[in-house]
Image 1 (cartoon, one colour):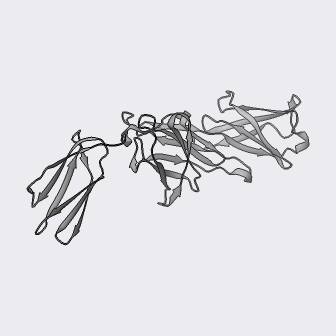
Image 2: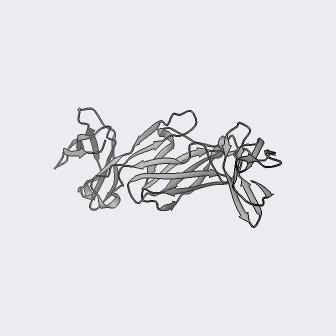
Image 3: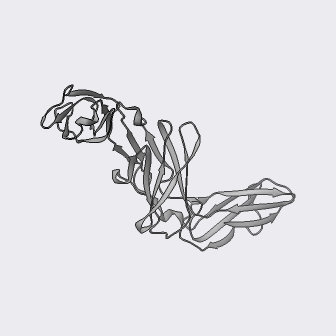
Amino acid sequence: QAVFLSIFSEAVVSTQSTGDTGTAIDCEMKKTGDMYEITIKPTDPGKHALNIMWDGKHIPGSPAYFTVKGPAPARLCYILSGADHIKCSKGAISFRCTTKEAGKGELTAIGVDPFGKQFECEITEEPDLTYAVAFKPEVPGVHNVDVKYNGLSINGSPALIDIKSLPQGDEGGISLELISCRDTTAGSGGTETQVQQKATITLPIPSKDHKGLTVTCKGPDGSDINCQLGQGTDAGINILFEPKSGGKHTLTVLLNGENYPGTPVDVEVQGL
């Protein structure tokens, strides 16, 4: 951060700062009496120019040149794109970012939900200067998460995560979560990565029958769909499957190799 003090007798004053690459940098100007305080937050090291204009003309000493030195910039940190780096587990959404090229620094993340409400994000350090940023959405819709390194937004930030629906959790029934994360990293062209999570249905199978159960799932076109048995309680057992498209899916539960009474079960998947 650079601060300049300049004195003017009166004021139609404008400022602009450019970095080493010629890109414009935001400036903040505060007036106290005849004194103006100009604050600049450079995003890159190197030579910078500060243009101070009064009634459209440079004042004496403008442009002012200064050189920025210090820690590696936020542009060397970025959000990792692709399905492997965004996950949903126990109602929490997480994505990953890295500061490997910049080194260790202060990483923060603030989220905003579709209604403009801010929410907290939890940052967990992983090996090799990679971090997981996690939050628990309370409503469906596009969530905006701004990740900053030493106070400046990193490449790919803000991450835009579209929560299509929320898990129903312990309430039972079908819970389908489809998450899309817009990858805004440099050179990505705004690629949208979609990550399909497991759908869950709870069947009222008593706990005495849970041992020896197996399950299969067929998609709308008759293809095999990944599925597995989840947690069981006295009231029933969860079945998790991974739909690839909307439409009717058929779940067949077997007990010791034979169809369990009440199955197959047809499940209609919507929203894909």
